[in-house]
Image (tube, rainbow, N blue to C red; front, side, top):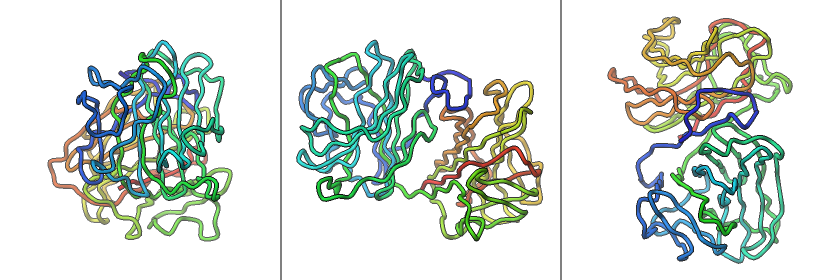
Length: 383
């Protein structure tokens, strides 16, 4: 599934997915539906797990993760993979669920030439629901698998499709829409057993996110920096001279975390992305950077640096990922122990195992040279 080495702007037909590869723990739940009994779920017999895929043969009650098997915190990320289907629909992803008599939310994709992405709310399990957000009449490839993902921090919701942020919203808090629940699951909306789901993943987490709004202080307080940076509501983050922007003690990661940045090149010339810094401890300690370097083809590269003075670094691994594209794109590094997995626009492109014990718990952004055309639209770190 999900094998295509193209990057794009927000032309969603070319956006592909990646699935997290975390072990089950008190902070992470992963079900690849290899257990036909669905022992991790409160689900009716309408659901079945066959050949590692979940399907349902008729409309019915939702499948919700059993709270005795995994407890979802108030800060979490939930995702699932939707396989190609003749119906071009997916069953909705449920979040913010409490019980059948309380409100909940859904995320959904429709594939095909006239595809769409949707967020909805339901006052209870029997209501028709209300559309909160839709992006419609967009081509979404129905021959490949896709990923739906929702990140929830209290009332704040971020909706992702194939690794790219699509929409943000605040969950409503009126009495008639009580969303005290934070259970997650799947709704059997369509009577179609050709709709197959896979890799349902929940990760309890804390997320630091900024799109660098214009503020009097210029930069969020969770960053230390060198060089000169500018922020505005139009350009997001602009580097005025070479420098580093690195998270400080206000947000430190643990052994497992992810860091990502979204950037955009507004010029017609192929230019390098900002570098994503990971495994950073301090100025004198080794760390890694990830960068997409543009040329006749674009190449994602992972560098190891001996210290902050080692600007060039040592190339550890690289891969050509797409033809030159000056649109909005995302780099993500997923850190699991000594393993580093690099994603570009949601697609896993590089893997590397650190053998040098580089295990810093900070991340950030680096510009090797000033740029008036390459903007960092957002930065996110999840632990």
